[in-house]
Structures are given as C-alpha cells and as structure tokens.
Image (cartoon, rainbow over all chains, first blue to last red; front, side, top):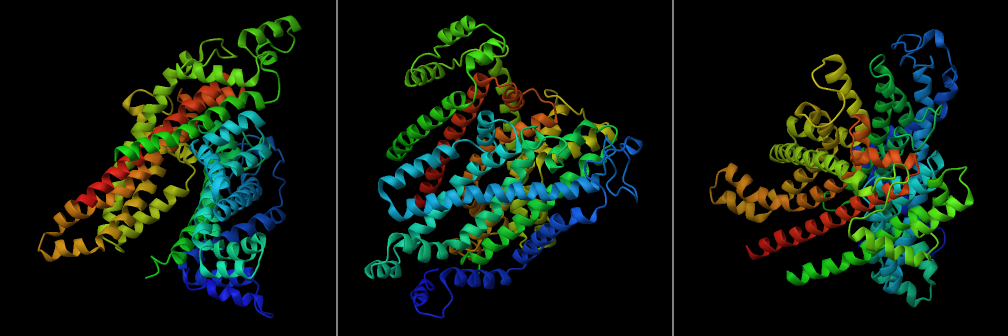
Length: 299
Length: 306
C-alpha cells in the first residue's frame, strides 16, 4: 500500500481520475486477478438478479393460500412443494431471497457508514476522542454474537425494522476498529503531511485522501459482514424476533418449516439452502478479495 | 508479565461498567412503566404506586443503577416479573445447561477443527486439503439452526436413531453439539491451516528438516506447537459466540437452557430475567477474552525465550 499513495497528489491536476474512481479501478484490477473473488462476485450478481426479476417471473402470489394442495412434496407444478397453507414454497423462497438479502445489505450499510465514520475520526484525530470512541466500541464488542442484537430487540420490540437496526449496531464496532487501524497506518504517510502543508482542511484530507486509500479493507469487511448479517437476521426471524408471518423472509420460512418437520420435511430444506447460498457468495467474495489485497498472500 | 496482567485487568473495568450501564438501561429505555407491566393492565393506580416503591422505581436513576450493581455483585437480580420467583433461582439451572452445551461444542470444534486444519496444511493443495477447505467454507456459511433441523430430520425422523429434542442423555447431546460446534470447527480449521502454513515456511522448520528430523517430528513437535498460538485466540472468541449462539440451537432442539429463557422472556417482556442473562453471558465473555489475551501473551513470551 505504501508505494501507491504518492500518485494521489496527481489527483489535484485536471483530467485525472478522482480519488474514488482511481481507488475503484485499482480495486477492480486486483479483484480480477483472484478467481474465488470473481466467482463470489458473479454469484452475488446472479442472486441479486434473481431477487430483482424472480418475483416477476413466478406466476404465483407468495401469499396465495390453497388448502387443496397443502403440504405437498416437490413436483413439476410446485418445484419446492407447498406449505401448510398450500402456498407455493418456490415462489415464497424467491420472494424471501430478496427480503433476506436486502436486510443483510441494509443493516451492513447502515452500521458500516457509522462505523467507518467513527473509525476515521478516531484514527485521524486520536487523543481523547479516540479513547472514548474505542472504549464504547469495546463495550459493544463485549456482547458476543447475536446477544447484542437480542438485547437491543428486547428494548426496541420484535419486528423486522428493529432487527435491521440491531444488526446494524452490531456491525458498527467491527467496521470502526478496522477503519481506525487503516486510518492510523495511512495518516502518517508523507503525502498526507504534504497535503497538510499545502493547507488542505481535515475534512478534505479524510474524505479525498484517506478514505479512498482504505476502501479495500472496508469492502472486504462489508462483504464478510453481510454474510454475518444475513445469518443473524434470519436467525432472529427464525426465533420470531424479526420478520413476522406471513412474510416470506427465509428465516421465517424456516420457522414455519420446523413446525411441520414430521409431515413435510421439504418445507425447511429450501429456505435454508438459499440462506446458505447467499452467505456462501458473500463469504467467497470477501475471502477472495482479502487474499487478493493482502500483500503477504500475493506471493 | 505481572504488569501486563494488571494492565489488562484495569482495562476491563471501564468495559464492565459500560456493559452494566447498557444492560441496566435495557429496562429504562424500553417503552412502558415496569410497575404497570408487573401489576397488569387493569391494576388500580395505588397498586402500581406500591410496586414502584417496593422496587425502588421512584428513586433517581443513578441511585437505581448503584443498587442494581450492588445486587448484581451478589448475584441478586431481583424477582421475575412473570413468575415472581427470584431471577437467580430461574437462571442458574438453565445457565448450566447452556454452559455444558457450549463447553461440549467447543471441545467438538477444537477436536474436529484442529485435525482438519492440520491435515489440510500438511497436504497443501491435495484433494484432502481442497475438500476440507470447501467443507469448512460451507460450515461457515450454513445457518446452524437449519443444519440442526436437517440433522433432526435425518437422524430422528427418518432413521429414528437419536431423540429429536431435550438435553441430558448422551443421545440427546450429540445433535445439538454438532449443530453448535460445526461453525467453530470450520473457523478453527481455517485458522489452523493458515497458521501452520505460515510456520512451516519459516527458517527454523527448514533447519529442523535439514537436521534430518523425520517429517512427523518436524510437523508435530516443532511446527504445531507454534502454529497453535494464534488458534488459541480464536478458540476463546468461539466460546463466547457459542454461549450466545446456543440461543438458536436450544430453540431448534427445545433445550431448556439460557438461550431459550432469553427468547421466551424477551417476548414476555420479563426484563429482570433478560437483563441478568445478558449480563452473565457478556461478563463471562469479557473474562474469557482476558484469559485468552493473557495466555496468548504467555505463549508468545515462551517463544521469545526459546
């Protein structure tokens, strides 16, 4: 990372890519070199496309009840079978894919934005501000895994919106820590001193010169956290704390499936497989990207 | 070393204060007057007032916080709002169930994770390595509550080998432990592999090989010992997330542990029980991390001395 930043001074000259565009180009060229990052990336794109246009292609209404065909096993007509209300599980899973993915992505983005902001100011300004922010992050990290989300939901109430908020808060400390570390590593580089000497404001230095340079670790963390967020959020819905029936959110579908384990095992099978596919895609992408960006592994 | 331990002990004080403040405020940030919740919707104002006085809800907030800490330090968490039993009486039997589940799952994940990770590292890029890492990636990406349901479907419903629910007998323990421990095993396997590969590429391993030591001794006596150090950190973190992750596993297998207790009481708005459970788990987590930090430092120091 230490060799590239010097180029950024050039960004002051006209007709050169802006710092973010350059950062993204750089990012993309690294991404292309790593096969698993590419596979993960394509998988994510395919899942997003299915989530967007899938609901238009499935003819059935996800909530359409038909007791004539309840608890049927997978067939040509109902690919994934039907549930206890005779609803088509394939249609519900396709709708649920979009819901579950957007919960994970929204929560990660919300928490990520706050975490990145806190990490930037913590790392850049240091001192008391840094100490206070990082101690608060330590406190949030003292609640392992899903526990913080559960504690927050106990205050906020059990519904989908609160699950997003709870998972977002759970995301904040991990982003803040990583961004703080990267900011610390970047801010003492010579070109930042040069910018300061030229009279650039703190805001400008942080926004135009530090943030573009630490974008890669943020994207890696973002991808890996979406995986965690999808698992946590669907888990909370499974517990009845998140999406409520008749929402076809995948965790809620699994919760339905559990009640009919003895008569119709297929109900629980497919929603779980799709959750795994989403999580797998973001894990592969994040893993591959981390390897591509980690100079130690590049050898 | 002593200085390091003292410094780390001092560092956890602000964290513990923060955790207690956050847990304490659970009750106060939630909508609704606690006394109303306890007394019920239609209770006369005089009853509500009485309850407020009895619980000290009319004291200033800092006084209430101080009392909360004082009681919590003696493991007195007040009475449940739903069952009126002392919270600690409800909590401890369930705590031990969850603790057992987490300990067994940790042992399972260490055992499986280490073996898989070592095989992967020693046979780098072999079919065994690629398949182990692929399985680990799936293990990491699988919702464990779904995995639990699938196990139950096969081993209880289709084959009838294992009881689908409950906790206590050896047969009842198998599926929950596999369910909860798989993700940890995946994490440990990946960590062990990369840590082993790191160590194997180092000079002193080349020296050991050059001395003519057998590959077995090189791997198990020289490489493994040092490769395990970073794995220790992961194991510590795993134990904490297992305590919390038990919530889902307990729900799947209808295990009457702390996770199920938390979920039931959140839905019933029984805050003292939720407060106490969250506090107990996070305080344990903080101390487990402390122990991990210290042992990490200790292990690293030994390397320096070597």
